[in-house]
Structures are given as C-alpha cells and as structure tokens.
Image (cartoon, rainbow, N blue to C red; front, side, top):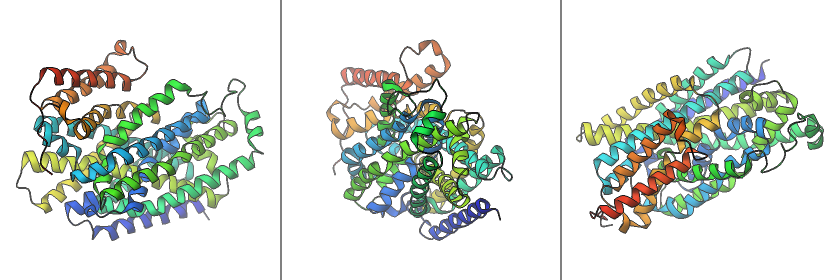
Length: 465
C-alpha cells in the first residue's frame, strides 16, 4: 500500500471539494476576490499565515539552511516582524480605506498613469512568487512519490491543482483550506523535527556529521551574517505592507479591528516555522550530503514514518496553494478591476468582471508555470522580485501618514524610478555597488520622491471620508 500516494490523492480531493463548496460564496466578483469583506480575525490570521508559510518559507528556507545553517530561519523571522508591524500600523487603515486593489487606492491620489504602472509592477512580482510555489510543489511531489512524479511532472501537477482551486473558489476557498493546511503543516513540521532530531541521536550527533568546514551551522546568526538578515527585513517589511496578494487580505476583513488583530496574531505564529524548517535543512545536510539543496527537506521528511512523512509533505505541498492562490488572485484582481473595468470597459457588468478575473487566473497561472522552468534558487529569486515593493510602501505610508509632502506626480515618478532601478540592476551588473537591490530601490525611490516634493507644488487632494 502506497501511503503517501493515498494521502496526496485524499488531499487533492479535499481541496477540490472545499473549492466547489466555496463556489456558492464566490458568485460575485467581490465574493471571489475579497470573500465579501466578511472575514473575521481567525480567517485573516490563517490567510496571512497561509501566504507566509509557503514554498519560500519552508522548502526555500531549508534549501538555504542546507548551505548556511540555522540562520536561514530569519527569513521567516523577518516575515513575522513585518506582519506584526503592518498589523499595528497599516492593516486597519487599509480596511478603513475600503479599496479592492492597491492600484485603485493610488489612483485616487496620483492618477491613472500611476495606476497602470502599479498594475504592471505588481503583476510581475506576483507571477514570480507564484512560479516559485510551483517549484517548491514540484520538489515536494517528487520527494513524496519519486516512482510517480519526476520533478517536471510534479511541477506541472502543482501548477494545475494550484490554478484550478483558485479558479473555482477564489479567496473563500483559500481561507477555508487554510484551516486544514495550517493545522497540518504546524503539526507535521513540529513532529517531523522532533522525530528527525531523535532519529539522529540529538543535535550533538547531527553536528558531528556535518562537513568539517561548516562549524557554525547551528549558530542563529553566523551563517547568513548580519548584512543578509538586515536585507531580509528590508525586503519583507515593504512586501507585507504593499504587495497586492497580501494586503488584499486586509481589505477582506469584516472590520478594521479584525484586520489589525489578524495580522499581528499571524506574525506570532509565523516566527518559529523558519527555524524549524532550517533545522530540517541542517539535518538533511548531515544525512544526505550529496543531495540537491532544493530536495533536502523533502528527502529528510521522507526518511521518517510513512504516515507522518506523507501528512507533513502533503501539508507542505498544500500550503504552497495558499501562497499561490493569494498571488494569482491579487494579480488577476488587478487585471480585471484596474485594466478591464476602468480602462477597457468602464461599463463592465459584475458577471463579466468575475469572468475576466477567472480567465486572468488561468492566463497568469500559465505564465508562472513557464517561468518556473527558468529560475533557480527560491530565496534569492524571490528577494529580487520583492524588492520592487519598496516604492509601493513608500507611497502607501506617505499617503496615509504624511499626505502634506505628497504631490500628484509623486506616484508615477516614484514607481517609474523603482521599475527602472530593477531593470538596470538586472541588465548591468556593473552598477551593483550596494550589497542588494533593495537598498538601491530605497535610495532611488526616496530620492525621487523627495525631489518631486521639492519641485512639484501640486499637492494631492485628500478625499472626504
């Protein structure tokens, strides 16, 4: 009896069932993309955790830990702190502002040109993040069932299931699925870590099996180093503050208090998972020194009891759905709302808008699949893509807290500067005088924003509440 295969088939059946049950709540575009703005604190919390604990925060962290050790867990630590800060300062304000997309919010103050740039940049980021979830999903299925799935087939299967569940049920489907996914992933990762450490005879034995040139693998800071950890925080805080797929959760809250509490509680839950995933990566380094880094965590878990291994990896795989669903939904919402309804046809009916959103899920999901075959290194790739959120965070925070320094042209020129910085950084390596793209983004965007504030006297208009 192939226990892992049975588990994954049951899991797929449950996920599709949840999507079809959720379909009746997603017959309007608002229900599909915002769950009718009816989510209370527990579902807000689970949605944020579901976005955070995806491929990058589990498989990606263990992949990095396989190389540098326990300090890779600070990737999740940065996510955790970012969720708490956004919950305290921004989530309630986002819900009170009553917008569907970040492009809609910025267009209120900075005009349609800013909105178009926002849609372009946000879609680029979210398609990249979705592609990375496919890669993690393919690695998990290949490790779970190597006799059934090659990595390529696992990648394709993940893409099909991720896109289909999003297409059918929207945000309601992701929210309800996260109750199951989050419960199982926390149970599975905790139990798998305990079982792996016990099977290896404790941390001292694990340390003894590590290569001689890696004495600091169990140090909380040494492997990554302060500069890298600071970079993770510099990227994660603006990402959580301004990426459409994340802040869409705040917009779906039933009230401002639920949005605020949900994000802050999620931050508390997210923190330990990075270090547990990193520890599994270290154990994999000791146990499978010749494995590829991406498959390290799945291989380690598969060495355990088949039932525990199957449940844990199936939960990890399904957790990727939460992240992929939120990213696909965020990008697709912007295509339908900010391009389809506002620019192409302002008289678009609610039914047609929902259809465009669903078709956008299919199109963008397919693009993400083809992109998945072109990228390598989950954390390094995602950090480059997410760096672009610095421009959005600067605009969102300035608009909400310091509107007197904002000008009508601030949005367009700040976002244009952010996009140009990303492309120049990638195309011309000689300009990389700073340690990471995120620092260049902050420097350039703040400089452009400041210059516009000095030379443009046309202040933004704050709408009446």
